[in-house]
Image (cartoon, one colour):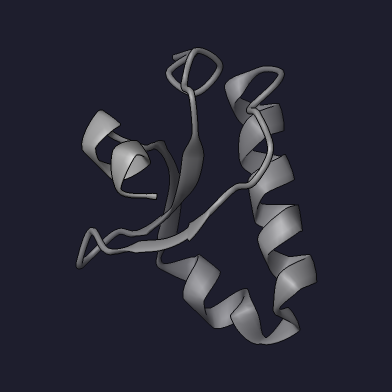
Length: 70
């Protein structure tokens, strides 16, 4: 565990397609569970209709290549 707390950036990724859905704009802080809750809460606030998309999403650390492409 603790895969997220050391990440530079995190985001929501589709489990099936591995497509990056959204990038969390804040620095990940806390335990993995706290970070996952914060990211999911943030994404839901951005788009209330996102509930369906979040069923098939996982919070993951972004790769260095993904961070550079931002």
